[in-house]
Amino acid sequence: MTIQWFPGHMTRARRQIEDKLKLIDVVIELLDARIPLSSRNPMIDEILQNKPRLVLLNKNDLADPAVTAKWVAYFADHGLDALPVDAANGNQMKEIMARCKQLMAAKFEAQQRKGIKNPRAIRALIVGIPNVGKSTLINRLAGRKIAATGDKPGVTKGQQWIKVGTEMELLDTPGILWPKFEDQQVGMRLAATGAIKEEILYPEDIAFHTMRYMIAHYGASLQERFGIEKLPDDPDNNDAVIEVMEAVGRKRGALMSGGRVDLEKTSLTILRELRAGKMGRVSLETPEDIPQDPL
Ligand code: G4P
Image (cartoon, rainbow, N blue to C red):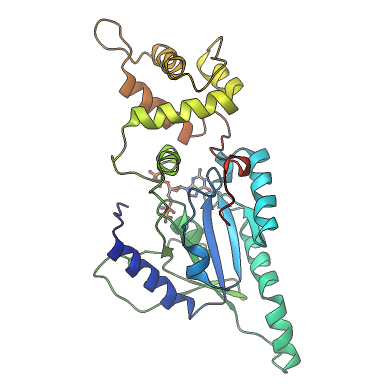
């Protein structure tokens, strides 16, 4: 999906979510487990107000488990229940429902005190930036493929509820949020994970930043994957990072005539292998990387 965000789009996206919020009990906020903050909408708290919220750290199969554990603790410190999931695999669906029920427990108890014995199904809305896995999750929860048409411009249709077991209903069209792409670091991380598909950044730049991070945090995986004997001691040394990329290019046979390494081709290879999890489970940001706590 190609989405370009302009102020008008943002206002409309926000209004669409606010309209949906009136219909639902719980928001399921989908983030990319590899970059939980970079894949987060900057205005999310303002938009969601005080709706009960479950945070899902999706694509957990690709993220570093130790870093994901830190993120879960980070969100817990900020009063948010965060669950790592792998929507593509779909093995956490019961747990997602259980967590949503937990979020509603106080409301259900209040209803019971008022004499309402069988509360209606919990109504949930999935929100997240493009490509974070919203449709995949909806299909998994629904247990079938749901055609998504409602959020395309010019297409209007009534809201459809999808039954998830007997105790939950899901709005069939997710809320699409914009990422905070003003920050260059954030843009690089979004591009590295494939969240930004548009060719607005050069693959060489994305791969360079990714390599620098990998050298600093996942050196052993890098060495093993590409048979690199020695990595630079200082990942901030640009020339040394380029040398590592060139070594990868030679290893993968990405050469131009004359034997020089084709850096563009090498960069695309690096990014493809990273996104496919070929370099192991890699997270591209940790709670410690955040200079100022944004929450
Ligand atoms: P969206 O509705 O939020 O825009 O995202 P969507 O479900 O379309 O998912 C985007 C891509 O992410 C899809 O890949 C999907 O298979 C993949 N994906 C979703 N959940 C997971 C997960 O838990 N783990 C992994 N590894 N991948 C996941 P795709 O169809 O191949 O598209 P693309 O990769 O070519 O964009």
